Amino acid sequence: MQRILIIEDEPDLRKGLEVNLAREGFKVFQANNGESGISLVIKHNPDLILLDVMMPGMNGIDVCREIRRKGIETPIIMLTARSDEIDRVVGLEVGADDYVTKPFSVRELVARIRARLRRLAKTDEAALARYSFGKIELDFEKLQAKRAGRPVELTPREFDILRLLIQCRGEVVTRDRLLDEVWGFENFPTTRTVDNFIMKLRKKLEDDPADPAHILSIYGEGYKFVD
Image (cartoon, rainbow, N blue to C red; front, side):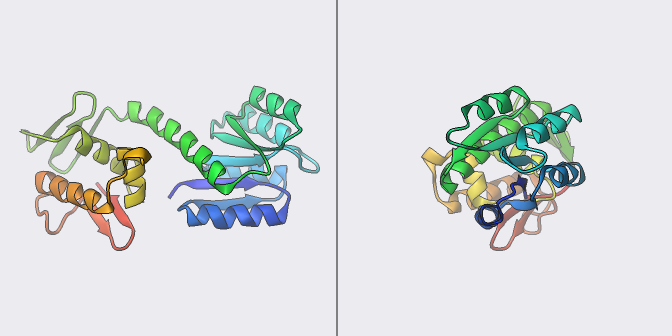
């Protein structure tokens, strides 16, 4: 489950964001000021930070600058008032990755969050060149797989599914997320398509496809990869 930290002094907005983001499948942490926000960044290492610019005391610009000074590269989306163009510019200059102007729709914000996280995942993909588990050896650069030293034929789509599951190993990956990140929102098939692909992968990679040891079903949610 991807983690988002909200640093925002307005309690109603903070609560509304928490409820909507949790509904979208994110784990949410909250801070109502800059100082506690920085502490939570260090403590929880979130995947993304939503940071309000206008806060009493330590404002969002200073918080962003301090987070980057500490060498923390977590993506930051600034929440700014529509008239605060100078704050948006300065925020990007001190290390923010994106900004959303208030008032904003939750749908727009979630789209920005997912786009930023997908961009981060693509960077991680480059690092995942090879991976081994059990009797399986995977080469994501050459799209080659072996089981107990013998070649296994996997399609590019099957490699994409495995890459996402392995990147999120130990965490539940929902069917909707698989559809979104592997197939793409514009080409949504049905969730049954995901189940069929998982079934084929198990037949190719698991010792006992009926009782898998690595690609696990999480009832009502999705799938989880374990070594």
